[in-house]
Image 1 (cartoon, rainbow over the protein chains, first blue to last red):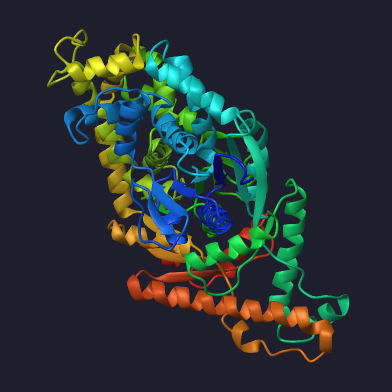
Image 2 (cartoon, chains in turn orange, green):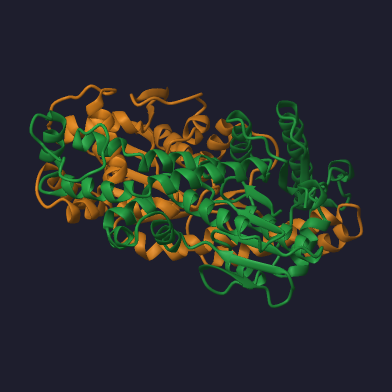
Length: 284
Length: 342
């Protein structure tokens, strides 16, 4: 999973995608890789799990060997135009930039290609051993993955088209790009992950499906189950057994992959990421 | 007067189940009730009597007075075009790939479609209660910002930039000469794409008056609705729940879903049965920890925000029938029709 230039991490909203992105980044850095963790979405999920208040567009070192950044719509557009398309620099807050920004919101795929393009660009430029990206959630993911094809179909000629075709090739190359899907063993996350699986696999190599928040069995034998029924703990015991049974059913529908245990009690987001890194370390 | 109950919150917190439960409770109390939902789990959709995606309310076969509709975003956008633009313009819009892109990819697109659908049903006079399961984008906040974002989109800022006209109203103004920014955009995108964009925006602009008026009406509905924010005691959903307060939206109620009974923490004493009980002891101690975490999270939340709170118990299996949904309300503390003004 960690043996490529770019690893995208996605999953249904609420399954712990940002925590897993941070954990994989921490794990890769612990193993001596030079890592860039990148948030492709506009929230603080990745930042808090890396233990910082916020991230900027310039990479900042959050721990030894691990840098992080977040996408900034206006600056990513500016960088795309200058570096990717070799066009002159524009004033970031001027009318030209504002107009191009509005254009990017209207023409299908432009915003998406700039975001996915930033991840591919960082992955390919050689500054990092690996780029691990907190990608948009499952519901939006395919429109990002499809953006290079969309753009190539919409823009008949020109530099944008050429760049889109290059992105399409890099995205589909399993040595360059992979995707880790995160799910929790519940109905909607599992059903939606499996429904999207084939479609996603058309664009990018699915490196792994990671199951988060997995409960272990309640006790070691049937005797202990009888025991718990006779005590005031019976409600907690029943909930645990019920959840565990339901989880086993949903896990059976997912492809084999790393399982991260449910975390009980109080943890900061930074502690959560470190714990997941420990768990994933036993698999990878 | 129709009572609107908007159930909001981030992904994965159980919003759709809570919305369905409120709908069942309201219908059983004799109110003619519509549940407008986005994307329910299959078994929940079946419990609501929803077999197909479609904006048309379907009566529940088992409960008189309960109706449900599953929002179809694409169909809603077509309806928006025909509602606000002359028919020949709407015909052009709905077949334009740019329109489809705006509908599916414009931030707030799904939210705006849902809010217009909500307004249609609130204004129809057909319902006592309309329960809306709002789209989860940005933890649910996007839904409330969608009308003003939509007004900006159709307001023609981009059109003015593309055409250089101060008051875009007629075609034929599109002109590359003397506009370096446009020449840049033209070089980058190549070919006739910019012209297509301008044509599309001219068409979209015809919806401006209609959408401006509708967006204002939707904002008024938001102001009088009972807003229910659903969260869990996990840090991510909690952070999203607090954001409502930060942007000035005052919910009627915050529901902590997947709550554990407070007394669990007190009842955990180690079992004295040697090795066999070791794993069990460990698990029970973990649940006690979890109870402590939930209590802390709720105390911390109420310290920051004065919104009334309710708790809904953690269920091993999601409810799949009407009785199961009613049990969600009955098993809760504080999630009642009274609390929602229904």
